[in-house]
Image 1 (cartoon, rainbow, N blue to C red):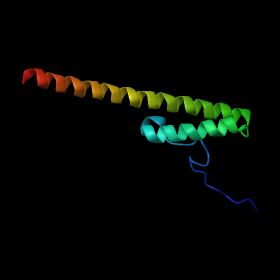
Image 2: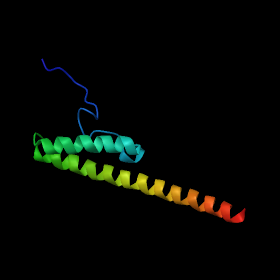
Image 3: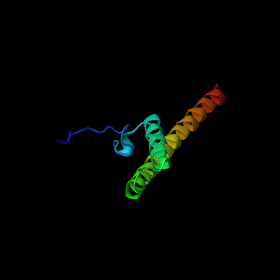
Image 4: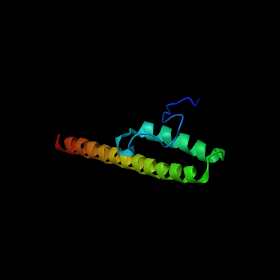
Length: 87
């Protein structure tokens, strides 16, 4: 008799949450797992393509998070400079 198993995103790369909901750190961790899985060569081609697609979505998420952080740092810096020039 076959035993049912539950797979987590960690044991089955590419099965995680919507990338838009992930933190930068979670997206990077999943991306690293996907790369390792694809590079292992033990994944069928169709699964590799699915994982590659997921990886592309994770890369977009990471870029978006980094861009938002850069924008926030620039905003904070501009505010700080404006306060210094006023005082």
